[in-house]
Structures are given as structure tokens and as C-alpha cells.
Length: 344
Image (cartoon, rainbow, N blue to C red; front, top):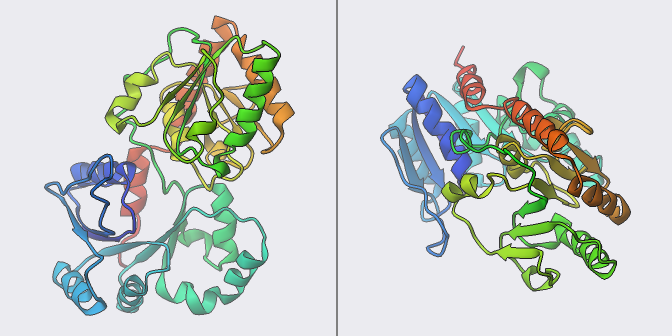
């Protein structure tokens, strides 16, 4: 099967999903994506069955000609904002080719989402036969947009499980690890506030490792137990997460958060907010981690102090449970779902 992918910013985990499918099903992919910055820390390249092309310089006519030459059996479109992509989607949907759109927005019930639901028959559904969402928080939004249950897929985002297959936790490192952009919506100001309080109270008897870069880097609290690494290449992350302690993601809002899946694959207990979409799949309270309400600094403080003093047995039990939950979304299922949509 020939699969056309119309993307914006292509990610490493999406590349891993396509590569897995191409390997086990011999499908071929043509991927159009925005040109990555030359300063990007890592680059993705074409493989034998996956051709990557930059779309920035192509007008609608040139793009349509390349798509026509490829003659796809199925089309995936990331979102519905690029007019060039929408023209292709509408044309091929009319001809009977399945056209999937992806969505990771949770249903929040705000005025903008209610308007999108109302206008969906005019501006969304005419272009797509199916919608592929990250999980249940997005499933409800897909229903509000008018997609039938049979035309809604889940499990859109899947971490590269091959990267973490050998990553394990064999002892309790009393450390909390954050991975991501150091920006405000990640809830870092709340975490910084809590850490500063613990420093003042002389209760920071654990380590914290921030991995990532961003405008809040200079605001990371200063303490001998707090470490900052500005960037880690994806292939180096699994080794770094061995015996790394507990993962923490204090986001004020996180549509999904593939990094939570990666932490689960690494066997790390997880602390994150109720507003983090991926928690719906990969975190169960008192089983492998905890969720709390974003902005609740007191709840976060209590969780840090609780997890820091876990005994070895409890920590390893939570680690084992994270590993088990991590496989709820996997590469085989991702491949099965994209192959389940065939032309009638």
C-alpha cells in the first residue's frame, strides 16, 4: 500500500512508527513536511520505503502533481490548517480514497471548540473520512466534530519502544527527572516555587535533573542536588534514564505528551498533572504514579516528599507497573490501525 503523509513538523517517533509499518507490511510512504531548521539538533532522513520531501517551496499545483504521480492508496493529514493539504484531501476523498486527519486537542468545552463543532460539517468533515486521535481525551472532541465511532482511531502517538527496550530501573535513585522545553505552560514555575520552598526548609534530600532548554533555564533553582542538561540526543536518552528515579511533568496543559509514554517504557514511576493527556493511558494513581491538579503547589510538594522516601520494593513495583502500562500503545497496534483503513 502507498501512504501519503502531509505533515508539518515531522517527529522522530512518527518516523519510527512509519518505519515499523514499512518493515512489517512493506508499505511505502511519501511524506511532505515543513523544512526543518538547519540549527535543529537532529535531522530525519529518507529511508528505503519512506521518502521525505520539504513542502515549503511548493505551490498547490506542484504539490498536487507530485501526489498524483505517487498515486496514494491512503492519505494522512496532520490537522486542517494548510490549504494545499486540504485541496488534496477533499479531491481524493471524493474519489473514494480514505483520508485521515490527526488531532491531539483535548475536549475542553471552550467557545472555540464549540464553534469548531458547529462548523465542522462545512470546514472539517468534507475533507476527511476518518480521524485519528491520541487517546480518550481527544476521542470526545472527535465525536463533537461529528465523526462516527467507527471512523475514529485512537493511539495516534506512539513512542519508539525499540529505543527503550533495554532500559530498566534496578534500584531506587532518589531523583526526579523532567524532560522537555523549559517554558511556562510546562508548569515549571510551580515546580520551581516548590523546590525553592524545600531548599529553604532544608528538605531537599533528593536530586532533580532538568533535561531541555528554553527561556526558563535561568530560573532553575540553584542547589547542589539540582542539575540541568540543556540537550540530549534521542538515542542517548534511554541510557540516561536507566536507574534515573521518578519522572515528573508538571504541565499546566499538555495535549498529550509522548515523553510520558517514553518514561513508562523506561520503567519510571510518573508524577504528572490531570491536565496531561497521556496520563489517561500511562498513569494510574497508587499503581505506577500519581496525577494532581495543575497549579496545586501543595499537592506537588507532598508527592515529591512521598516519592523521595519510597522504599526499594515499592519503587520497583511501580517501575514494573509503568513498563506494563507502556505497552497499551505500541508500534504493532499503530501499524494495524493505519492498515485497517482500506478503500472499500
